[in-house]
Amino acid sequence: MNTKSINDKISQYPILNEVNLSLKLKNVSKRTILNYMDGISRFLDFISYDNQFEITSDMFRDYLIYLHSTSLKKNSINSNNSYIRFFFFSVLDKPLNLYKVPMARFARKEIDFLFDFQIRALFSACSSDSRMDCIIKLGLCCGLRINEIIQLKVSDICTRDKSNMCIYIRESKRNKSRYVPLDNTVYRAIQKYAKEYRIRPGTDRFFISFHNGNKTCNETIRRHFYHYCRLAQIPDSYTFHCLRHTYAVNFLRAGGDILDLKYRLGHSSLSTTSLYLHHSKNMMNTHISYYDNMLKKGDSHDN
Image (cartoon, one colour):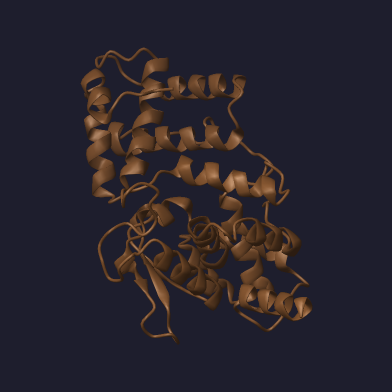
């Protein structure tokens, strides 16, 4: 694992300063900058670059051949390919024969999403924990990424107008911001959690916190999520991100528009959103709020 900071990498390879500046001009996120710097510095390590000799496309090709000989997944190899292509085009200002450094073809992993009985089991398992109940419903009912939940401030939750409740997601992936509607299911979870933990509305503190109002981390949420998945007898292969997939599939099942879904998920490309279409085919109904409808049916069955 490479634990060097960006400044450490630039000290070792001054040419990376140009990478850093070029990415900042593109106005990408800090996480994206770090990913590119990591990927390009690994390439420079491979060729034992000493800031003097010329970097050639043959070196790029040799590095790709090496990556294919490792246990690295094909999509990770393609990410590294993209980093180095950017390096050649934007920093070295050199042309590339892309046929010599092609992207790897691979079968895209099937989307994991929860079925209705698993959703009910998960809701039941975490019902006594208002914080995790709220976190899970933010993922399932709003399609939020785990980092978006962590970054959420109290003031970003707008519930004053009950006919138009929403959450403001600030500068998420690729620095994109968006509004995501709230349905009644997640609204009730938010209210219960806020009341139990005495969270004052409109403040600028982090909404989700496990320690005295401090910002939480991904691993803390994942650890609690896996605990409740085990209680609900949901396989360990399901990650927190599966909640986002489940939201997307069920939004389309409920008759939602794919362009609306693209905006709600914060996707840059419609082709990414379209991956959910084949999972929702022939599973349509007329209710956009899938969870309100599902839980309402469940209540009537219990009576």
